[in-house]
Amino acid sequence: MTSDPKPRADQLLTIGELTRRSGLAASALRFYERQGLISATRTAGGQRRYERAVLRRLAFIRAARSVGLSLEEVREAMDRLPASRTPTRADWTAISRSWSKRLDEQIEALVALRDKLDSCIGCGCLSLARCRISNSEDEAAQWGPGAAFLPQALRRQP
Image 1 (cartoon, one colour):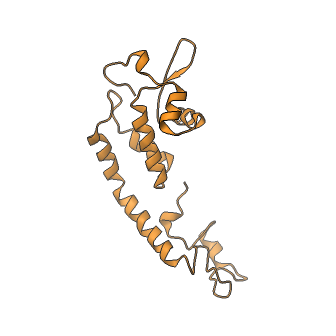
Image 2 (cartoon, helix red, strand yellow):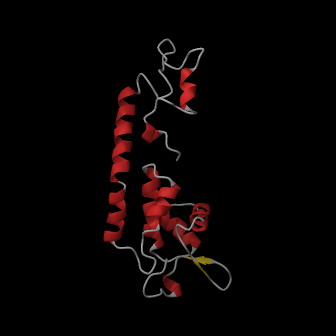
Image 3 (cartoon, one colour):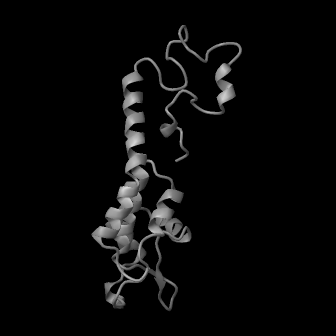
């Protein structure tokens, strides 16, 4: 990720500054860097320096993760961003639009969960007398691990 023109050293952020500005822990920043989601340059002494545009990428990552997108989905989206310049609003909009269907499915699943929460949390009824999976045969086991009755959109791995 490189912006044009190349920023001056006094325009780069230290990891401490980026932590303060982004609200993310330094360990998260280093993890995102190892995952190729953000990049840093190094000083002669080996200290990380980040372009200010990394703040936009971190906000994007945080928003994507908060709506349930996996890091792989975030990576795929960010791979479509330009490496030769700071992403524009149009770049972010194109990526965000590609998530519309996914988010609509998640919203629908959350509404269904909310509406059934007083009687079912996805793993069966809260009342053992009516529970679909509280039985000696445990029929729900055939559908795999976890809360088999949750909507599929809510059973994705985070």
